[in-house]
Length: 430
Image (tube, rainbow, N blue to C red; front, side):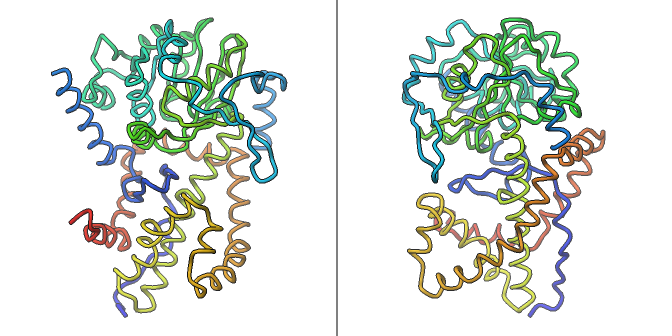
């Protein structure tokens, strides 16, 4: 036993980042930064290809009163092809597939539109490149000469042609895709809102700003269509799956349906940005489930479980490599892909009798221990505490420096240092 090793069980609690839940594209340490090396590599690859080719309870009450009512009869377009009604564990839901929106139909449908994509972070990168590859007329709006401006140029966006500052892009666009960070949406809203004139469509990929508008001050205009398409993964995943011909799953929602075509437009946009299928939700449910999930099983909770299991193994004399393999490597490389492909019930059928017996005995105890924490987390999301925390931290002038200190703690944890060495041993990395 390594007696010098003294884990800090609290060092992992204070971090604030975003993570994706997609079993086939996994990287805990990469997901710690939106400007990760993998995204830079993807952007560099895209640039090279271009050069080669072309040379809340209280808050819920407030937000319900603030948002316009949407008629229940209008929620699902009637007689729409490409819609399947699927029984999800006893509950029937409508799912829209990309099969009814081939590229030619998308081009005809959006032939008179200019997509003004505001912000070029994770989602802006993935959705913007997919729209461009689909032949959609899309322009980018970011702060001139900032880091996002430079990243967009690396990806082949051309200043004055399809790359503009934010206000000019909003003025030029008919569909305004607000993909700025949550804090930036709040900061820029006073200058953007007056430019959202009648006839335009306002698009979000996260319900954060409009749902918690009493905190963010982002109140969508009542005289234009306001829609949401939320890919269930990072912008990098949106891009990767699109290039593989697969497509990510997404949800869509409608805040305002002034024209009577908001639902159809949202579904079409879901396919245009690279979705394989899309299901309906509401702005409120999207933001509550998203904030809850990323703090729980998608990142915060799973990170906490990884650390707890790893630390106990180390404290009981197991080597770093053995502790990592039994905690992270086997999970991500062997088991999670199978769960993603076949389901947890399959795992119980496929594992050894000893593993099955142990899992059956212990999963109820983990559930009973964790459910109170998850209930507390959901209430913190619903009542706006998590929103306030995010806005307060991310709007501080020195937030990047503070965030870097928290991320540095994670990078220096033994478990993730060990992980870097273990990954080098994978056959594909030899």
